[in-house]
Image (spheres, rainbow, N blue to C red):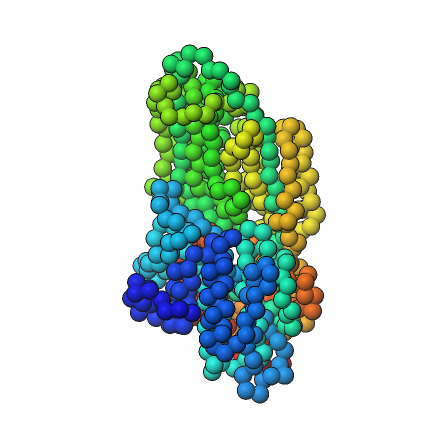
Length: 509
């Protein structure tokens, strides 16, 4: 990789081992690489591979493949594919001017233990996995068999890279470095469906007596939000749901919605933490509205006092004369206002079913109501359903279609974004056997073997390469997909040593 910037050089000195991993990660953070914007990073990976004497390949989709020969006499060992994705989820503080298309992520250390970003998501998912792979690629002294390094595009949105990969992979075993729990190895993951409700709305053509109304801007920010698979079981607040509930309870005061925005269109794998709504309301109800909505908000907060950081949550109601406001958008009719709020409240959000049969009571099925916004003459709601069961995914779709029928909405199936569950293979999985052995030798304890509720690329890669068997693991990362994302640096060296030892053991077969 190219030399890191001076700021990163100073930070690198404080991070300890493994320096090769941290150096690669800090360089990745300097390159904009949000979903749909990975060309610059892909080109740098290609140049890096060439500088090491290898012949990188880039397919039409944008995936990068670099092959590294085996160490010494290990050329007859099984080929191993090490896989990570290039893109990151771009999230920032609501008042931030940070530009993910040009600005480098500003990494900082907290409490002498955690590496995080200043006001944005960090991109440790999956930048740190990439960095671990690049460290192995660059180190000529490691013992391993033939290796294929696969870096894919747009895992966080459509899994486009894994879905339409054109590279010819020879590997028998796939090691995906895209999970965030030290001491755990994953052998399966949930499938998902991405859907959009499109509800036609009507706006007032002519609003008489504008001076009889006030405009109110209602907003909430500072909820934890986060990854819609990893954080969904923690039952934190959904800002879209909270604002809709608060407004629905005051529908008798004859207000009308002007605007409602929560989440980022097209990004369905984040639990929304910021929502703002604009309404107009007759002046005679203004004071009653404020009193009621603030009281109800305090009551709602009590449900989250052990889940959310209440000091971080900011709820605001701002009022001005409607006739003097800058809003040029006509309000919805009262009927459309009711329909919009009803639809937000009717669509399920949260854990739908736990996996009681596994004995772990882990999440089996969930749905995230991710994004709300107006588009032309429609109100749009984007959702993401996940399950390790094909039947449960089908049921979520059935329920969604039923809600759409009852609400007279269009139900848009974005089939291109769907992917199946990755079903676990415990037997005849040499990669699993070797990482368990490595963990036992290094740390003197058994490794936890589980399936995962988030979607992982093996679900699609194994369809394209049925000869492969896969595992997934990684260091401790919390708050993925949010401004609270952070790496537990104490886990990085342990994960790095586990990675190296696993490859060494696999080279014997």
